[in-house]
Every structure is written in structure tokens, then in C-alpha cells.
Length: 161
Image 1 (cartoon, rainbow, N blue to C red):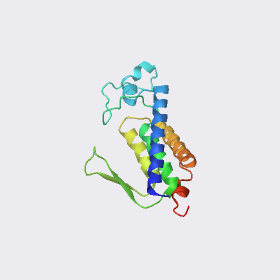
Image 2: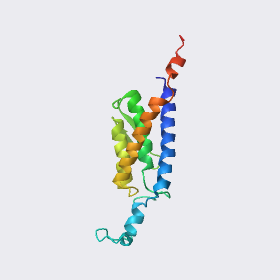
Image 3: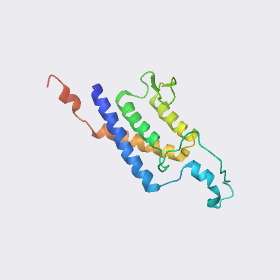
Image 4: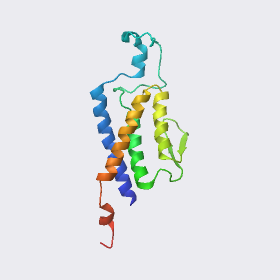
């Protein structure tokens, strides 16, 4: 498969994932951990004590919590990569502009997607169930993208044809 086709498929899957996740976020309108922890007393559940001073590690995104957007997009793109080139294709890495000099490396696409999910939980932005649902949605979107989009592109690019 030509590189441009792989790039197109990952772009389509990523964009479709964003549309799906924001549609779901505003449908469910679920509160973030910071809101839930600071306002636990209004649930009337004695097992969830209030901590009015609790803060996540970073600035909480200003949109509803469920499902995890980073998780759905990373899983959608990961599903395209797994379907096209396989899960283990050597080492790949990403460097974050918000953490200069820090480069993360993986040998499996699944490990990358799992790390994205864990980071969203550790940062205090998401609940585990939101990351799992996001990854599941993303996987389905990525697989659907590969199965239905750009079929026949390789044949059209064949110079013998």
C-alpha cells in the first residue's frame, strides 16, 4: 500500500473518531473527575467523600468527560496501522511539544494506545471506563475505515493498468 493511502486512512479514521466522540460527549454530558470529587457530597453516597481541594495534574478540558477523546483517536489510528502493517512493525516514537525533550517509544501499537489511556486516568481527566469505551469505539472506527474506504486505490495506482 502506498504511504499516501496509509496517511489518508489514518486521517479519515482520526477525523471520524473526533466526530463520534464529541457527539457522544455532548449526548452523555458526564462530569469530569475534578467535578465529581469536589462535589461528591451531592451524590448522597457515604462511600464517596468530598475533597474540595483536589486538583488534577493539568488543566481539565472544558468539555464533557465521557468517552475519552484521546483514547478514541489513538485507537482508531492504531486499528488502521494494525490492519495495514500489523501490530509489531519495529520501534516507533512520538515527542510531545508540551514535554520538550521527552520521547516515548513503543514496539506495539496496542501499547501506545494503552499508554494514552493510562495517562488520561493518571492526569485526573478521565475514569477508566471512559478510556475503555473510547478505545473500543476507536478500534471499531479504524477497522471500518480500512474495510470501507479507499478500496481499489492500489489498483488505480498500478502503472500496468
